[in-house]
Length: 57
Image 1 (cartoon, one colour):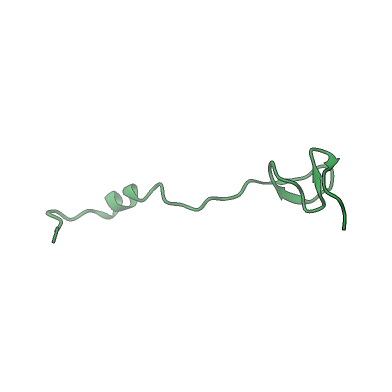
Image 2 (cartoon, rainbow, N blue to C red; image 1 turned 120 degrees about the vertical axis):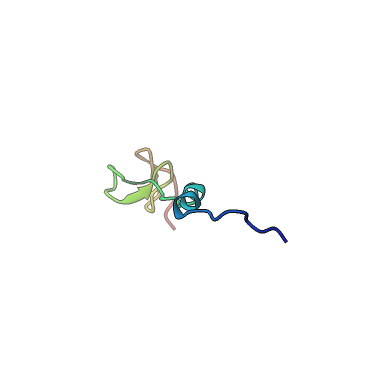
């Protein structure tokens, strides 16, 4: 079984794990509807780029 020859300090361990993090979605305020939505996605009301793209049920 492999065993470490030297102790890794907290800073070395945290440096190695620095790329592991949360991905925060890019939420923007839609100017047309006033709702929050993820950028480059259709808003909950069905509007994208100022145009209605989905039908209401």
